[in-house]
Image (cartoon, rainbow, N blue to C red; front, side, top):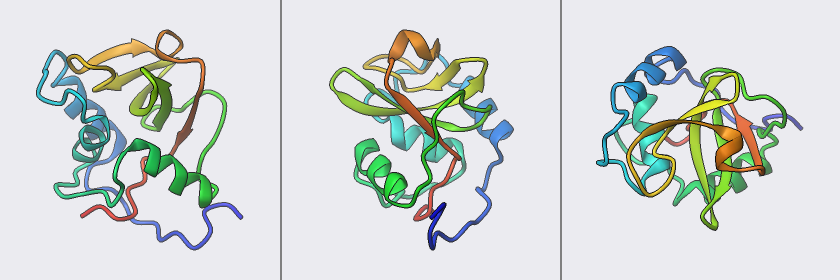
Length: 129
């Protein structure tokens, strides 16, 4: 069932370029409350992802058997619960993530300090353009 009927295309930015883009924005409050948009833009998609929010994305990814458990590899999207909602960040590896994590600036954090409930997926934006 893995990835059933999901077209695979390369993101406009690869994982390292996306991580560099995000790390250059650490401290910025311009992305506050836009974690999914931040990740979409990091991977090079200028327009909508086709998902309403991170919860919608997780539901779609789960339906297509694209969510994983265990340590998230560098460049993977990490979907987690915080402040009563599902959010998304990008894995730096070794348990750290970067993104518009909570209602504050873009930052790097230990995933364990954000949530105990998380899964990961490849950086996949099937409707991005």
